[in-house]
Image (tube, rainbow, N blue to C red; front, top):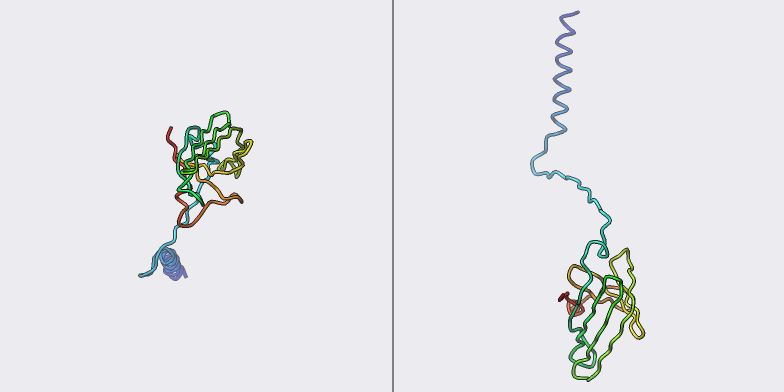
Length: 149
């Protein structure tokens, strides 16, 4: 009986090891899927981007060649806004406080005449439409104000 137990035990151990090896083998032509986890550190444009400074750009205008826009954002969350309508002899200037929206990625500038939102990105502000959505399409890049100081 002892002579039969040893070969049977050896056979079972061999089968068990072989089954473990079969689970780790990849069949030819298959790909291995590796899952990754993204760790969110809680950073926002408000906390991670050096947003204070001067931003400039010329945005599209319906009845003129463009609107030369300058926005100065100050560390105390106030702003100065200037917009010159090219070839129209019209300038709009305003100041006020701004507030952060969308978990610190969007600023809302509110002054005497101004009520607009911008998405804060690295070294730039992206103007948002009247509903607070990022402008898309062929002219989307024209609504970006780049940081100059």
